[in-house]
Length: 292
Ligand SMILES: C[S@@+](CC[C@H](N)C(=O)[O-])C[C@H]1O[C@@H](n2cnc3c(N)ncnc32)[C@H](O)[C@@H]1O
Image (cartoon, rainbow, N blue to C red; front, side):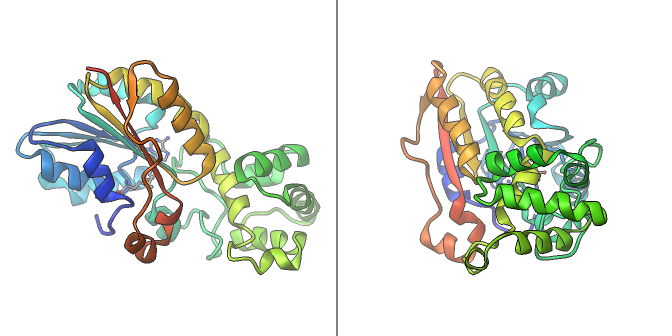
């Protein structure tokens, strides 16, 4: 529970946790948002904290032993939220938070290849039991499929060139480390692309992570279930970090007759937060309330 989570003030403002209320944190990560919620829901309010990453849950279990009465930790995919809630008999639910994507711990410390800044095995799984990892995509998928995910999930303008270069490189030797992939991307894209502020591997890495973890489908499955487990008057807050996720959240909130959208425009990070935490610059928070 070290770093300050993205859009913390805004999440608390919109979810508005009060003493003795219950919340579900679908992406508890290192627990920053949950801790802020638990402070406000004392003395008896609970949080059901879910994360797909076994390591994140194990770490939290040791760090939050004192909170055991008020914090229930579950290692699972939030796409199963309805089953999880039933299993844990977690009712009523006053609010639900989804803080999507990967955590700073996963990026900086997991050693699972989420970053192009360090030379790590190309794994990218949140859940180590997941059958698909990034090396399988890179070494066994067809060029067309690789190009498609780079286009669809990375919105990468050089998807075709990078996919072609991957297929050529893997015929020499398997692609298993992040720096191998960075090297392939660097050679497949023009010089000016490498001089841009955004690292040329950013979009490719994003696309691989989204595909490995089935991120957009998980979100699409979770949202209607979140509505069904939420008590009347309860709120759902979703923080997304790229346009594909944000579009899913926006459209879903608008299309559900039982929901009232509370953020006409998504809430974004303040200037001080943008300065101190670059990750917050792409964060968009959308919130809705279920009819009473
Ligand atoms: C941005 S981090 C959350 C950070 C957290 N809010 C905090 O304050 O520390 C996203 C987390 O969601 C988890 N995650 C991603 N997809 C998931 C899924 N389908 N089910 C459960 N957890 C998931 C990741 O493992 C990661 O720990």
